[in-house]
Amino acid sequence: MTVGSVATWVPVPAPGHAVPARAVDRISVDPPVAGASSPVLSIRAVFTVAPEEPLLRGHFPGLPVWPGVLIVEGLEQTVRAGLAHAGQPVADLCALTSVRFLRAARPGDEIVFDVELRRIAAGWRARAELTLADEPCARLRADFAERDG
Image (cartoon, rainbow, N blue to C red; front, top):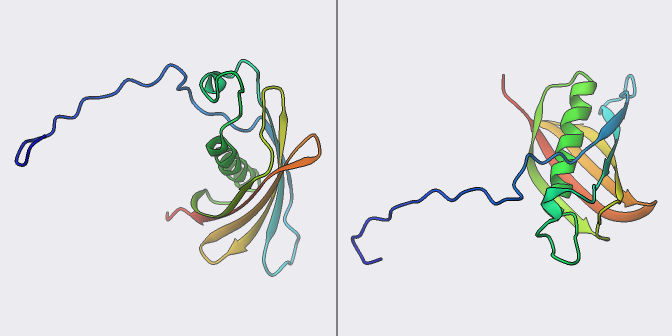
């Protein structure tokens, strides 16, 4: 390109592995503690990384690993489903304050999300401990903002 030229944007087709990302299979929610000054929700979610999962095809060839971004997606899906189950308003992920990946999730692994949500001024603060076969695999801290109206 030269100065003064106009760029032409060409649509890029979705890669062959692009599919809707389901990152949680099932959840359970403990009801909030009645009378608590700062409501707390405890959510447990489980996701099994299916060996035939299309997203594993290119991540990484010969050594498939569940992508870290889908671990974060799993946290968001867990929080959304948990809030809905508890009758709370929808909240969107607005900040990741800490993310630590401790162990790779591989095909056939069952990822367990244990999430504690605490009420904050604009929404919820999440602390998530993830395990594979009872061994730590990730720790995430994030904030979720409730939608206006």
